[in-house]
Image (cartoon, rainbow over all chains, first blue to last red; front, side):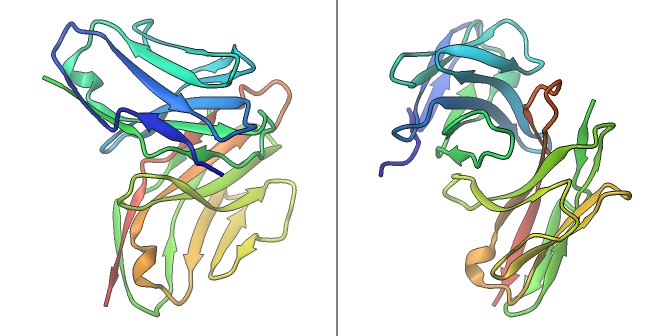
Length: 114
Length: 117
């Protein structure tokens, strides 16, 4: 069974640009969540999707948005990039949104904003 | 709001020895779940162990065990017989289990574990 796939692995952008990151969950998983990881800050929750609906959202500005498609694949978009958006963006999938459900993570997309 | 604190940015342990990673959390909820995730250099996080708050018995997974102190809001991870492959960043995480909770995961800032040969 293929794991969670995130593309691209690395991305370099300049301030003001926008970026779209992709996440393909494990087959059969309907819940996808996104996290921003920075040194010293740990993982910050961005949002969670289940069956194409956003179920939870973290405390990030509106420049951060996401969506989920009918095949459970998810995309995350960041518009008007800022230097502080440089981070590792992790995607995780699970079968459902049950609270003790184990998360399966991808290897992340390392975004550098210059 | 719930918070998770990992006060040890970095720890070292000799191979085959035992090490304990600390985690404290703050919440007003009575029902929740706690997790330890491991992030090796490959960056892919892996679940190490999880604990339901309503269970008094500490969770155990092979060489990994937790010391869950609900009243003290403490959730430490003990790794016995440390192996070189245990070297990684370890994250403690909290998730609400109440129907009014937001269900989002709250992670600590991580502890980098080095295993010395």
